[in-house]
Amino acid sequence: MVNKNEQYERVFNHFDENGDGRLSPSEIQQCVRAIGGELSLAEAEAAVEYTDSDGDGLLGFEDFVRFLEGGEEEEKANDLKEAFKMYEMEETGCITPRSLKRMLSRLGQSSTLDQCKTMIAQFDLNGDGVLNFDEFKVMML
Image 1 (cartoon, rainbow, N blue to C red):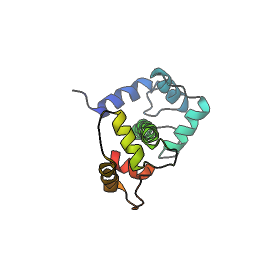
Image 2: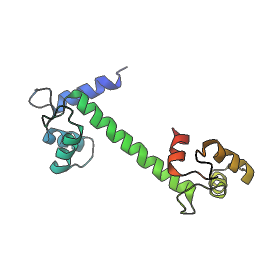
Image 3: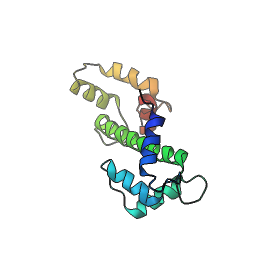
Image 4: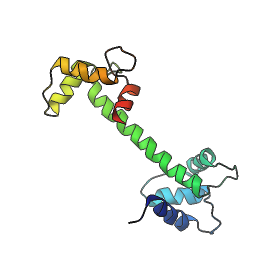
């Protein structure tokens, strides 16, 4: 079984066209395009600048891994935001016991309002009786 680092290394080597052990912004752009994404040259340059640890304007292998995993983190955060919106429902910026009960009911799980209050209390870090996005994130991770 191939581990994640070996997969990253294969991808890195494939796109390191000149074999210098570094990826330029245009090579990063080609890499993203190959996996079905779109990245302008300006966006690739910004990504390289943001992730480049030694300031040479290129990504070494470790920088490349950080670039890829940073994208995964962003995707996870976006997925969590979407899930939060589903439970929020009342557009208050919080998940209330009532909105939690409604969503659980839609998912086929019958719960009382008191049960929902208890569920929320387990992750309600500031004690306000509702879950804000940061508390929801803690609960989901």
